Image 1 (cartoon, rainbow, N blue to C red):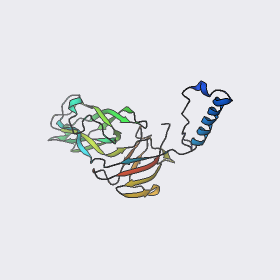
Image 2: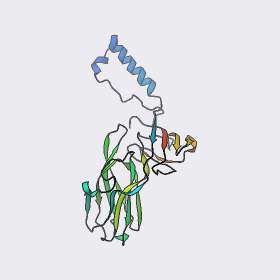
Image 3: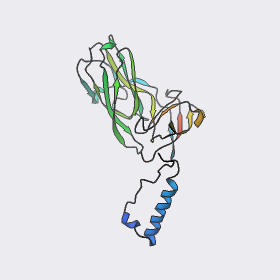
Image 4: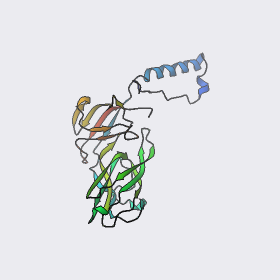
Length: 240
């Protein structure tokens, strides 16, 4: 990884023929593009994400608890009957799969969740995550942040006396691809529930974009409860 950000490194003229040549307006535009690229490419790309009152984690926000079935089952559309369901989560959040019921051991071994998340350009991109389901009462907690859940595929369950509920957890998806430097996420400052933490004292847990695509994630030490606010200043990768 280079020391610089690569800012402007991926940009090109919309009409290349207008910047060809060494003289006149074309030459000046070509020289300006070179100057801008040379100046920006060595600078770190910094951004800030502000999260105002992100919601308390909700174990059945995507799908209410329902009995398992002893066959492969795919859930989508009206099956996603939680308060969020197939709607968009802003900001993106990680997902949870909660096992309960009379016989939790009846739960399927795995669940695959498919959906979308907004990347650094704000575009919804497809992603999926495979969960190893708890076969005792408890929750499987996802690593990735999702904006939208579109489909849940449950492996065949061992019986029908377990229930599964789908919701979201405490992890928040970042708005730009978080970069790491020397193996450490490059976070400059964290404001958490009214307290400011410098880079050497951040209390939240950060996962960079290389580990939790497309942008990385943030787990505040003071977890979201619908009242806490957060702001994160960090270096991002503009070419990710």
